[in-house]
Length: 195
Image (tube, rainbow, N blue to C red; front, side, top):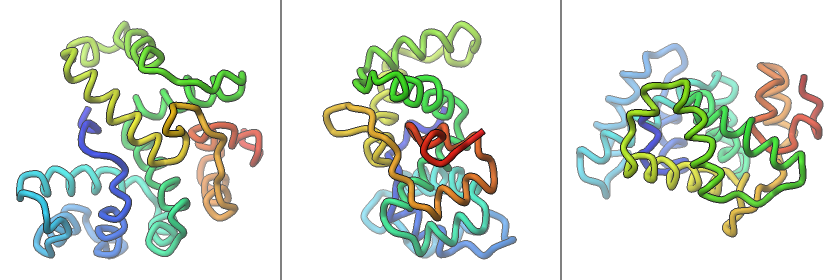
């Protein structure tokens, strides 16, 4: 699982999305991002890892979603990048639905590292890849996931699950594409009428 790199990368993701030409291969976009110095303050190897992660997420968005990412409000950008991360990583998607959304709907809005650890342990039973992760890798993934959730505004700084505040534009795009994805945002399926 390579989501162990960084957070949502909102500004950097918007910069890379601006470089992408619809229909163009995402590898070409990544090369353009590296050449253009989209990450001028980072070491080359760090920039390359970040660009690879950003492209892995952005390529999961539709052209319309990418356009909104570029021109949207900051909260829309965060929501779309959370959506992209969930699409890129089944583990994050399942955590969002099975832990975040379910706890929110049952009014248990506190979230702890123990909740992550319990979820990870349950998933390890079915995934040799997860079971083979070291304790330090699991701790890093946990820290990155909590950072992603905070930046996506589905988790507060004091680790409370926040109800989704999706804009009508983001909600409409999700409903038009796959209404079940509203469940990736705590309470949004109730608010916006998912399946």
